[in-house]
Length: 310
Image 1 (cartoon, rainbow, N blue to C red):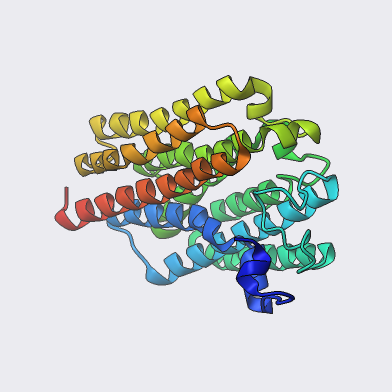
Image 2 (image 1 turned 30 degrees about the vertical axis):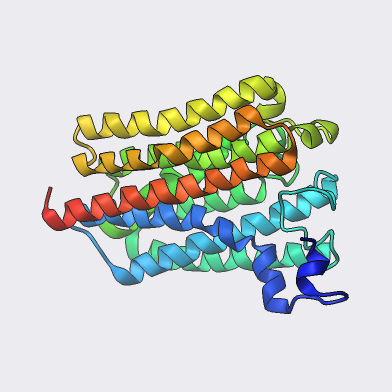
């Protein structure tokens, strides 16, 4: 069904609905889940603070929202996102917000995230400042020049680092005021899975990215190589979980993440069989679902281990 069919002829969504669409609200789980996982690992080690958790959670969501808005602005400016593009919020292309409004919204979101981060710096220590500055810089320059990380095949690596280890270990530090190996080990599988979301997106957009000079790992590797990379990312997530359990950095109950394997296989089957962007969009949705399910299962398993003192 078309947008006009959903909204009614000539109808326009309200301001709140437009901004929910602009920040790509469903994608914010990619920031929320690593915060929850970092909290769970800290709780297992005997550290927990609800106020600090809420500050970290809202701050991470704000930075992710800012990243989404700024990315859409610069993708629009570069011509990479057209009205026919499937991926972004499309609020600019459909005339719901002006480019300037989207940029200002991103700046405000980053400012909120930075302000909350400074509170956490005061409460927990200076390492949070460096993590916060690096996270905001990575979010802004993901598509902004002169760096434009997403345009030079560094998107997956950036997402892996900042949506995996940076958030999980940062949240752990907020709770415990120190870093620890279990937090790093917990973050690595989640980092692989969240990188898979971006890679599935890039597989879908491989042809349009090539036309607009956007170099991603998918455009460099070609479709067959890109499919294999997605398999490798999923396999690495489960393999590193196994290693972390066998080395006792994660509790044995963390093996429960293997119940999400069918979701990963479904995603892989789609990219192996389909070639049309609209059909490949289903693989992207499976990637988002896999990240949510994998992350929540790992979080709950770690909380159970904390409660049972395993």
